[in-house]
Image 1 (tube, rainbow, N blue to C red):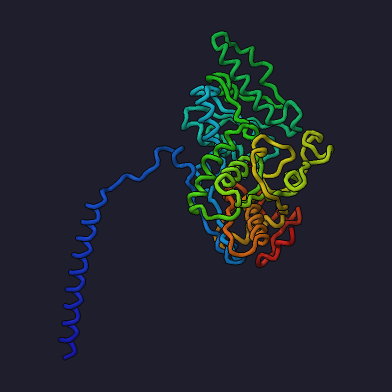
Image 2: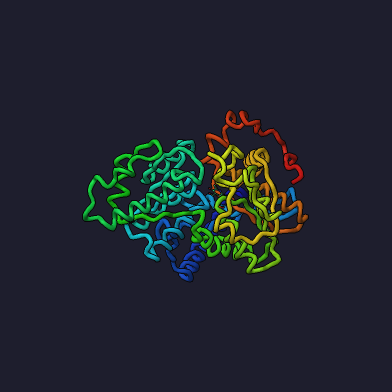
Length: 420
Ligand SMILES: Cc1ncc(COP(=O)(O)O)c(C=O)c1O
């Protein structure tokens, strides 16, 4: 009897299988007839920038009893929060006529903004020329050159020196404009005084991108309010929509101040009860500015020293001058973060959440925990995950580099977060 019963079960199983698969086929046919295939793609690189996900950072949320959400800006095509800024700067410049189609965008930048400008410039038919200090990690200029930008490495000097990299970048745009305006009379002699700069001679490629083009435009990320607007019109509204208007606080560090200013101002206009905070790395004057209204002593002001001293290993954040972008921020207070806290936080997030983040993102997460501790459990806190750890392999994720500054991580949990 046993084999007969087994055969019977097989037949029953086959019948059920056939009925089920025919049901599923019919269902999928009827659903596809209800919703015709709608193409779902982004129209070009620029449309793929922004609308980044908001990620619940599970480890920090569970540890603090707050919902700590990170805006994953490292997922932008150019790898950072600066993609939006690059797009806004170029679009506004093209619209106003300050940048001609086919022109060259110049920027003095030691990092992400230059990479974002070099990434998006070709999408607008433009070129990119970057002036960087020669002590910046060599892989940054390699990335820029691989992206098609020309790179001029100059010696690091004070912002008040005419050959500070930001000042050289500004000058390069003016030179390109002058050349463009007298294009017909152009002769090689007119480039004599600009080929030699600060001990460096610009190469043929640099000369051709600047002088064969249709004029230049200095991006000026620190003072150009297109930077602020990129966040006020983009990142801020995205966050508001993603949380359905349910948030209590926002915290981030500032470099140019564009991110903090754009997002804080937008959120405060939506709901003035939302608390907005700054987290400031060592050596930056912004903590004092926000909490005491005074930025620095006379000796500490940027430009008083030949070169800014080594203060922090975090990159892209902290500053000792008040930029037009930062002036637009609406802040309730500020925290200080240390380098070791940022290093420990980065390893903690890697271990517990699989988040591989750059140094400024790690500092932002230090700020998010400080804010959670200050507000108490039950609050929703937003911060920014600016870029990934990929761009920080030679320093922030290099054990040898960290050990020479006494920054070797050793914490098991969040005990490294001392009092503010
Ligand atoms: C990696 C990174 N994070 C954060 C920032 C700070 O953003 P913001 O310039 O908007 O203040 C920068 C600025 O250059 C940056 O490069």
